[in-house]
Amino acid sequence: MADLRRSAWRWLHGWWRIVHLGTTLIVLALSPASYDAPQRSALARHVYLGSAPALVWFSVLSALLSLIVIRIVLVTSFSYGLSQYAIEMVVRVLVLELIPLTAALFAALRCTLPQAADVATLRADGGWAGLSEQGQDPVRREVLPRVAAGIFAVCLLAAVSCGLTLVLAYVSVYGFNTTGFAAYTRTVGHVFNPAVALIFVMKIVFFALAVALIPIASVLYDRPHPRLGLGSARPPEGAQTLSEGVGQRPWSASLSTELQGLVRMFLLLLLIEATSLVGNYY
Image 1 (cartoon, helix red, strand yellow):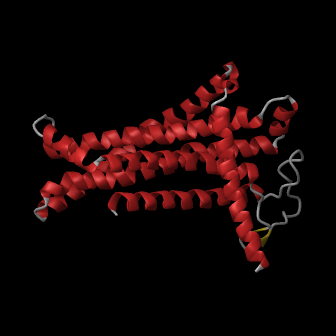
Image 2 (image 1 turned 45 degrees about the vertical axis):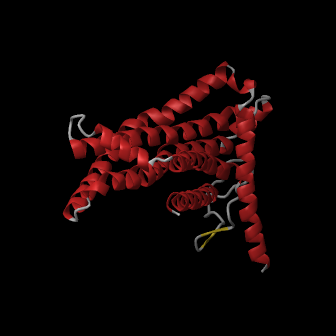
Image 3 (image 1 turned 135 degrees about the vertical axis):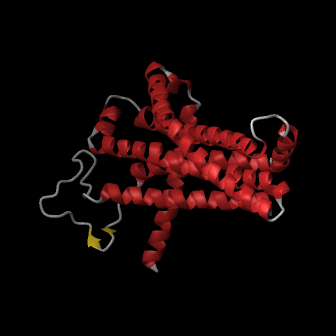
């Protein structure tokens, strides 16, 4: 029971630190001091590197996935005489559910997880302490641009891929003409009623916050578990610690904290997706 209580306390404390980091970053984002020339340059660089290289690849992949799902839905609906529901099903399955979740996972793999690894390396190499010694705020200087880049990446990928999917759905059904534009927009508007549209936007925003905050918060605050798998946390003979400046972290510390962050991120993404499904269909 004592171990269970300690585990529950660590779990709750970890989530509280994520919320605390998020509120701290909101305050820093609203501060004019966060937008001096070096900070603006760092913010623009991280936003560009986190979004631009992945945009083309994700657009191509989402287009291929969308075409496959659209074709399956259309053929199935036509074979059962339910062609009038084909477009609505495509919009609900792809645009409302699959594309935002896929964009969040892609942004995590391409942007936020590597940036969290950069923050962990910065701390391990003593750069974090060096910024503090120079009178600079490491959270404002290193964390805020990376979190903003992660949020922007998720929102951009989701918006572009959802728009592309809507265009592909129209072309797949009506071809390259405008004869079905009125019926198509009426169907899409029926799906995106005010309640569903609000849930859709909130889901993307919460996806972006979860993907951007949790990996970095894990490498900033989490302590590695004393055991990783079945082996001992003691490093093998001759292994070196990651850094002398941030304490004697064992060789498995980085992997352990990254796994904790991944578990939290996936759990929160699943919770957000389940909540949106309840809101949309119940």
